[in-house]
Image (cartoon, rainbow, N blue to C red; front, top):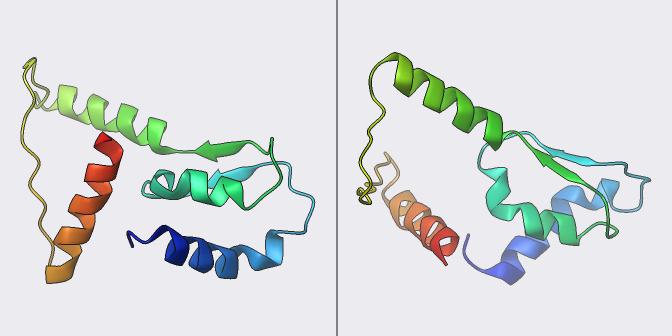
Length: 102
């Protein structure tokens, strides 16, 4: 989903039961949720901390790559190739990636 208004509408619908509840913090439990972290956070009162797990996933990935001699010391950027069994998904993944690079 690359339409910010549609994303906001979807998140508002999904999170509606929690929007007026006293919230101490928000835990994003999937590695792709950081893509919409700001949109989720904007629905709640300012100052509510948002916690993600992607740092741990990245650390574990590094550990596994080192363990299997798959970590490169290259200093030049590599390439990213998107693949999916869903043909429309590739363009979607590319658009999310492009948003991160901005």
